[in-house]
Image (cartoon, rainbow, N blue to C red; front, side, top):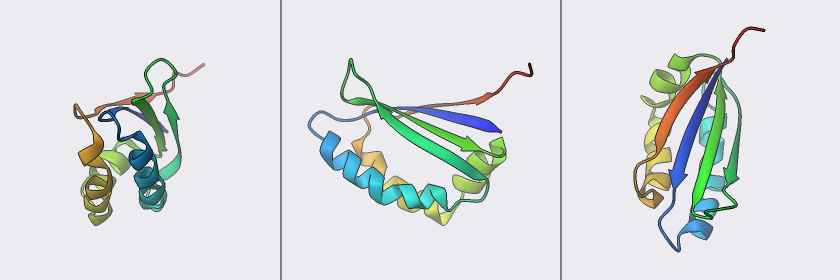
Length: 97
């Protein structure tokens, strides 16, 4: 399993609208092939900074399957105008114990 970690910096004064748009967009990602789970959290020290954590079965489920889908275009239309600057997105794999 792969963990996508996206740091989202939202334009000042746009957090309420962003959260509403995210609630509308969430079903898009939930319906994607390879999606496992997600959560979004708001930073306590900077209330315009969020982190989106998405578990995918494979890296390609995110980087190809999601990002090259029609659903991603809808996701972008709903959310990307809130970001300033563009999100930082990294992928992580658990270490074997």
